[in-house]
Length: 279
Image (cartoon, rainbow, N blue to C red):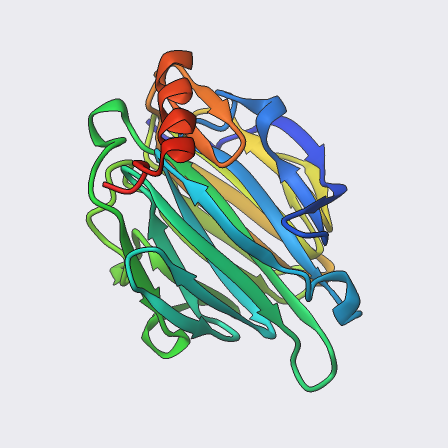
């Protein structure tokens, strides 16, 4: 098979708030359940005014998912109910597997110019792994390899691109997560596993794929195929590339908790109330 993927769905991110009042752009989420399976939500967060993000994301629970945070500018302090704490800065990644349940907080901090930007992606866990032990993986920028293709640069967080292996491995849905920067009018071919869900999110400039323009703050969900052809726009582009194995499972989503049935959701919130949520 030698088939380029086409654009199946094109969405523009929408301004939103989350946590204690953090301004962000929601790229996709609850209203696109199953369309991006196994990916649940993508937020592009941050601002040039600290007042719009300093309230942060105080203590809150998660169960049944993984959250992947990538910092572009500024930093975020995190802590959780099982004793983990730390700070991620520009180019760093935090990959948190909530599994059976965790309470944590994420508090953004500005850089010297008062800015803070980044992305948070939610990935679903399959039913058999929903209640796995929670774990954190903090990956420093220096440990994320970068592949050069022509004048394009591809940071590989997870998965493998042209022999460059990302540092995050052993994830159930086999996600491939690249951060790609391309100069003006450059062209790039990205291999994609057949039957894997694949999307790209343009966060800077613009690009063409399948003769379809994808602009800044737009996400393109792709059809099936074994590769993706990208041409950068006249000012170049920066985009996220994601692919992963779809779970094809029922989704029951209640705020920060994502399970397979409403009964599992009810039990999770009951355990929160009773103080038995953390296993």
